[in-house]
Image (tube, rainbow, N blue to C red; front, side, top):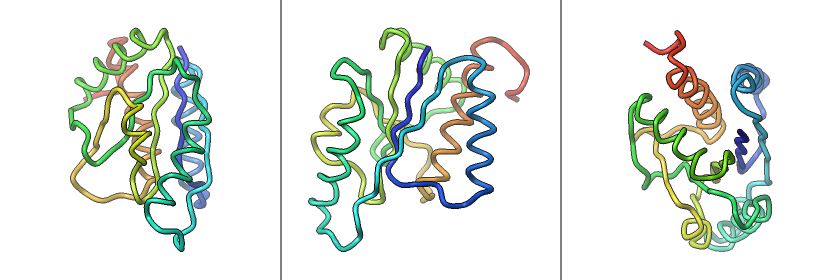
Length: 154
């Protein structure tokens, strides 16, 4: 199985990079993980132009046949068991490959939203996109542990 995360922006904090690296390593026991970073659009750009720039960069990183999910404020919230079930179905549906995108602070361009087959939201709370990356990697790891009936999830 292959999981590709496409993210706007770089992780600047070393402690956060270390945590993402740790969960990526743990997750690699279950699937191949790649994290692709695209530059976030500069703040001085008008919102629609910024969305287009980021969206084009993100979409250029996926195959036309890729199953695409988004981390999006308009997405579905779920608990970890539900996420595990949906993630495993996503891998089945995507031919063992799944791409999940985390956009920049402006969200996603319309063409990215239209391309996605599913949208997920962690919470109504605001968090940085780099923290969302850590939470997503950890929840993917937890999802596999739940699916394999291995201890970790309580």
